[in-house]
Image (cartoon, rainbow, N blue to C red; front, top):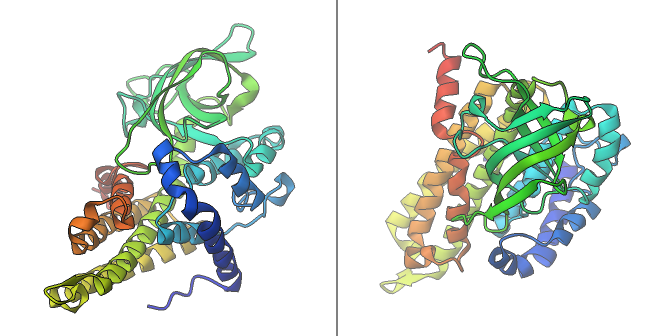
Amino acid sequence: MIRTIYNEDHEAFRSMIRDFIETEVVPHHAEWEKQGHVPRAFYLRLGELGLHGINVPEEYGGAGETSYKFNMVIAEEVARAGVSFGAYSIHTNLVRPYLLSFATEEQKRRWMPGFVSGEMMGALAMTEPGTGSDLAGISTTAKLSEDGTHYVLNGAKTFISGGVLADRVLVVARTSPATSGGRRGGLSILFVDTKSPGYTVGKKLDKIGLKTSDTAELAFQDVKVPVEDLLGEEGQGFKYLTHNLVEERLAIVVGSVAAAAAAIRFAIEYVKERKAFGQPVAAFQNTKFVLADCEAEYQAAQAFTDRAVELFDEGRLTAADAAAAKLFTTEAAGRIIDKCLQLHGGYGYINEYPIARLYADTRVSRLYGGTSEIMRTIIAKSLGL
C-alpha cells in the first residue's frame, strides 16, 4: 500500500540517516552489544547530526520541527538495519517532552543546549521495585528542607533505560503523602543531577534484548536536589506523567511497526537464499502464505500508525487512541516477528541473524510504556466500561 505520510524532506532525511547507520553504526554494533551500551561519544555524534534537537525549538538550539514524522523515519531506518541507537529514544522521545512542556524558561535555557548537543543525556525514572505500572503507588520521597532551598530525595527505582550513562534523570517522587482518597496526588518530578552525593547507579540489568541500551537500578540516599530543579509545580507529577504517556506510547507504536517491517524484509531475503529439499524455502506454499499473512497484518498496523502520527501532529491523539495503537501494533509486531523467525528455522535462534535480535528487542514493547493489559483497561474505560 502506498504511504502518503512523507514528503521530499523526509526522504532526504532518510537517506542521510541510512548512510550514517551503514558507515558509523553497523560496523560497531556487535561490539556495543557486548559492552552493554553505546559509547558515550556516540550520543555526542548524534548531537552533531542534530538528532537530539529535531523537535526542540530553534531558540534552544534545535531544528524547531513540530512533526513526529522525522522521528518515525529514524525508527524505521534503525529497524531496517537491525541495529539500535542505545538509549537515544529515551532521551529524545521521553525526556524532551517533559522539559519542553513543563520546564520554566530559565530551566530550558539552562538545560536544553546540553540536551541538544548530547553533552547532557537524560533518562526517566518512574518504575519502582514494588510498583510496576501502578504509578500512584510510588514510594520514593522528596522532602523539602527547612530552609526551603532543596529537596532531600530517598528511595529506589528500577528498569531505568539509559540509567547508567545519564547525566540527569527525571525522578518521580512523593513530596507529600498519598491519601486513601487521592493516591495520585502528592507526586512531583525532579530533574536530578546524577553526580549528586548519595545518588547511586546500582546493578546494570541483564536483559534478553535491547543490549545496547543500558538499563539500571537507581538508589537515592539523602540526595539534595535544589528547588530550582523541580519540574513544573509541586504535586502535579501524576498529571504530567499522564500527559506525556501519549507521546511515549506513540514512540513504542512507531518502533514496533518498524520492527515488523524489518522482520518481513529479513525473512524474504532469507527464504529466497535458503534451500531445502532441493529448492528455495520461498518456493513452498506455506512460506508464501505465512509471509502474505505477515504483510497484510503489517499493512494494517502501518496504516494505523501513520494515522496516529498525523493525529499527534495535529494535537488530536487521545490517550485512548494511543493505547489502542500500542495494543494493536505491539501485539501484531510480536506475531509477525515470531512467524518470520520461524521461517529462518534454527538459524532464527542465532544472534548472528538480525531476526533473532529483533525478536528479543521487540518483546519488551508489550511491557514498557504500560503493559498490554493496562492498554486494554484504558480502552475499556473509554468505552464506558
